[in-house]
Length: 391
Image (cartoon, rainbow, N blue to C red):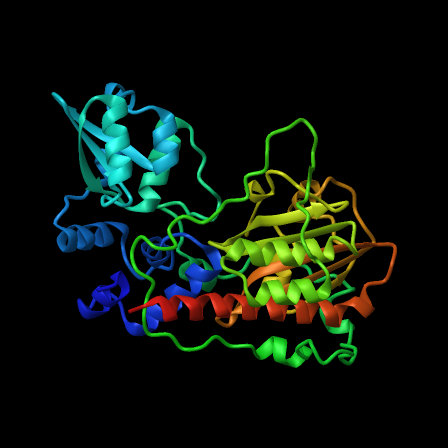
């Protein structure tokens, strides 16, 4: 049986929580179990203990992963830790105890055993704690999409009281929506009420666990050239309908709008903060944008869009959060800025930002709202594909 089905049958989570977790996985990526922990539905040790019971493989404790002797850390080269996301936790004679996200990965076990000369004994480790250990002992930075183990879950962060934020004069309410002009788009009203289908099953443990990360090539220049793809309107719509994973959706949206606007970016809203997903400046990708983080306590236009669940049009106020946003895109304020939310599960999960320079963006608003609605539908398709793959 699948992990989600097992957890529901065991009474660990409800069918509704299973459904919400699957939706969250499609949006934010990562393992199904990690999303359960991040959403506050299951404690990480509960999950590890449950998996251990079902697989018959022992699991690590938080203390084991956070208190590893130096000679044990040195037993496995960094390249294998980074490649397979594993951690050595104990060394006894010729036996190396290796914490793994997937202890059934026999290729990893064989390769590490051959490279180290030790007999590898696999144990299960929760992903969040594993990533913290990799960062602590090997300096391997974890992606910002993963919340701190001691931090808020996505649900708890979402329900927390929002920080005070002044509302600019050029706010959303002052700009009526122009009427739609093309039948191929959703209407603005449809974009606001778009809902996901009800799902009652989960993706299996281990599948969809490794998503391609936005890891641009290192270099001295600020920007990297974007790949040659079809970013025409027809090409983007076709691509969204056939997107196989979440990063393809962001690439299509940013690539298409990057042909029209100097600066385009998508931010993810999760864990009580905004993090960078993908951005272009002058039609070139911004490397390292995924490391951008704007905390909730720093007032920003992103926070305003999340709270109002509506668009923002106009200049940006001089706040710490807005300064971080602009600095991540090369710096410099623009008189015309438009931000449009991507709504799923009744809340804002991502925000699109475009820089209009000195040109008015009012005429572009309906098109961008409809594009974000199409992106939301692409996420819906990913969720449906997950359900189809369930046997």
